[in-house]
Image (cartoon, rainbow, N blue to C red):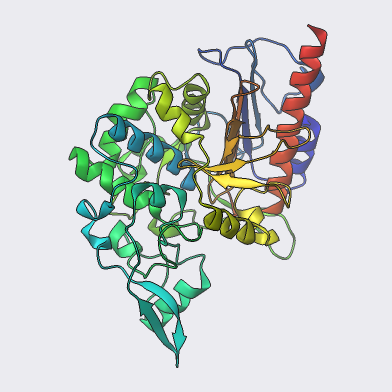
Length: 434
């Protein structure tokens, strides 16, 4: 597995990447050799650390100057932000400040009269009065009808009709001021629900989302360098890898002239709870580990269970499956094997069957636009900044972190899958020796 990553990086097929995996044990990564079937101890290019089961490997460089990438480098994590917003929401639910199933318009009057886009007549949008209420659960499971205009053709058409460009709003309300794509609870479409959920946390607690998370999500885990406002943290700039992009002609990963400006990155007036955070792989991994261990530092047991509970209606689940049946969409939203049975919780995508050589049924997953992803036996996130997983059945979580566009980059999906399979194979071989 390590040779495959080294060769892919040397060939220019992937940018520098960071790989992390671990079990429920706590503490810092420490140098502790195990799993020799995965490690070449004489390899000067990559780094490795273990304890109980803790795996760390950094491959390649973070900029054209040749500086090596590492677990403490601060990356734009994009939609991996969503997991932390879901945690913040459940903390507010525990305190009685929010209700997953109540009408959200008391705190979000912007959505009170939001209509549904049902079609077009003579190049004019046809709008219909919304049926039913929008709940916080709808927002978190992408069943509210709030979409991403940068992804959805109908919303792009609507923006063009209004003489506007998609993806340029610097506040949540301006970014997501388009009609709903469907009536709440009837379908599934990836969108800005977590950004509105972040606004609800702010209005319920009277704290900016950055300040709320710093106090209630990051500080309990000793996290210091997560931020929605990297432009205010000059000390982090040297640790931020340069963004790469897949060159359409050569197929190589090449450095972007400017990694800023994506979705107003660095210029946002609001703290976007669905897309705007920056974090190091190491500190983000602390959150995965906390949930794998039961959430004690962050959430009550029943709240963690809610994060992993399938939440879609039958109609919404069918809609999700239809969208994921398109190969390009499947790659962009996690890259699970085509045809995998899925559901969605308030925190991410759930595979509803075991995947051969990989994660188990019930793993929660998601990721972020610049090809990141995380996962665990019951938690897995894929964003192409990183892929993450938390597998509570096997007691394992992992994170694949890189910085390359476009979202759903096939080579990044391929390498994330190779990493995950190697970790599970190593676990099986280790257990067979015990």
